[in-house]
Length: 484
Image 1 (tube, helix red, strand yellow):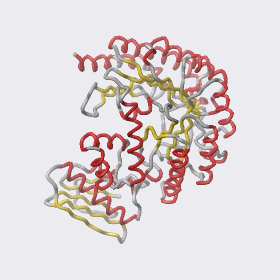
Image 2 (cartoon, helix red, strand yellow):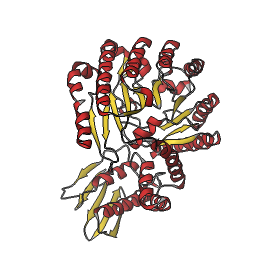
Image 3 (spheres, helix red, strand yellow):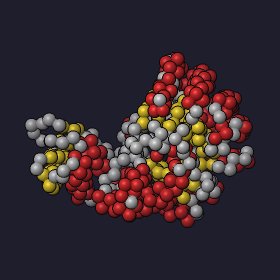
Image 4 (cartoon, rainbow, N blue to C red):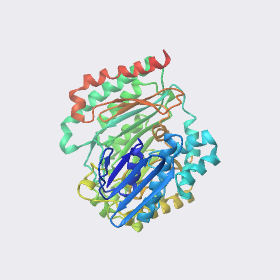
């Protein structure tokens, strides 16, 4: 698909909007051109806004009088293009023409500026968000707000990355290393990670920052053995002032990495929230996506965690997995509901370009989108009936059905970290390879975050560790600038 741009600068939004309807195609943007080749989207800003669209025998053009501001013109052009794409494909997107990751945050901003009633009207009439998704956004925002109000100007959360997994799932695009390929790196990585945690804690102490939550992610943190886990967790507890910490989460993730020794290490180190994620309880689907564990291993791991005293467990499911059907997804969700976990996070499959799934030729199609929407509709109905609340939500590009990921929890068990990181409420300090520190100014009126990147790959992290530690000075410089 070709996108032609004339006399304006808002091509990026038009490109993203086109991708909603043509997710499997490369979109080439032309800002200088002498001729136009189909298939195309043509956009021009003159006395009027003109949007043209042509695929095969379908060719149509819409125009509207231009507005005074560039922001208004972008909105008008996007609305015209959305109408053309809906007309051609016969598809109405559930989130309308929203392409952003954080629809709840957009609703909150609009509500603060115009009031809740007007904000709803804008999302419905200007962005074409469906009534169902608008209600979900409004409900989620209400639960998020209670968590956001706990954060203070000096607050921060700590992220610790463990970039190892037993194997790579077919849908995964995270930077991680399988045990087979990276076993020799794990021990030196753990040792250096502990040093980075200590260095970060020294910076935090000197600046007087307040720790709100700790989150171990990955990869799969429980890929580490019990002694390695104990060492890293103990380093966190000994290095930071944990008296203000409201939540300590470790992503168990893969059930095949859960055993009593690891669970004991977590419990002894005051971890109060864990995730054990089946993604599906259909063994044939697990095999297709390369999970290399069984549904039975998940149920055993969950039971073991309960016996070890964990009373705040999250489980992840994914709607739209290859070969999964509505009935299979329903059976998976119902089997999870029977366990009564405190949190159930339901993702929609995201076709990341770097994933094995995508490189092997899987595509997004209308049939898969309709099935995923049916899955999420069932999920929302039954979890609401069970008393779960949607406490955070985000979206990604190239999601099946242009849908969303939602964290559902029993009341009082919402994950604070998930809300803070998704809303970009306060500073997130990251340790470990692939981590990105995000520094937020206290009481900032804008969403600007200053980022400090750790090295992506474990071998880089180990080989260039001193260089990474030097970057910690940027945290102090940021806060000194802010308060100095």
